[in-house]
Length: 242
Image 1 (cartoon, rainbow, N blue to C red):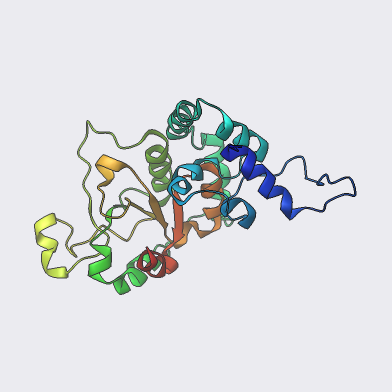
Image 2 (cartoon, rainbow, N blue to C red):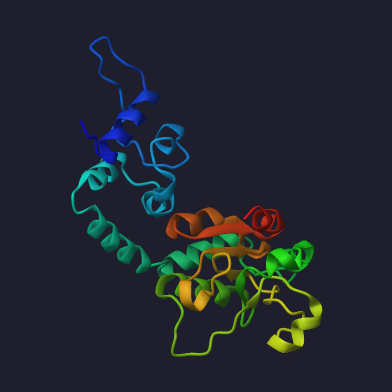
């Protein structure tokens, strides 16, 4: 008998919970779908892992019903479209984030050094595989607004959008107009594409968060679950593993 993926996944997830004498499992009503759950992870074919990341943190029962649906592909495509049209942070939410990032109200001047320092240790043979763009213009607070717009609306293809490797040999800098040969590192964020793919063609995959906004990384992850956010002081290890 053929068992659909959603049903199989739910049955495996139940194994993590106590079984009563009548054979039923005590499952929390609000259990979430998570690829960090080993019972869920072992059920999913490797080829589906990437597409199912979209459902991270959603209700398990809902995800399982979608997986069992005969129109699963159409539902998935609609959901991908909705995710790509994320509303992002409202102006009120941005003001809350500013207060969380800078509890002393005034934005300090001795910030955004970590990316500049730590990414110097990213080998060019690794960094050159990642297309990047540093949000280094305007003020530190404006840079959060810029990031919010980019992650919400995507790249404006009607305007010039310049990218450079995340790191490369210094002798190629003059050719791409970034001085050091790599994307700018002195801003609050560096947006990065997927490995060996251009941001302009395949979108943003990773965001390096500089030290100005370490306090709000969890908020960014929650608002944009399809983006990988990484601290600047952890970026070398992160991209080296990729």
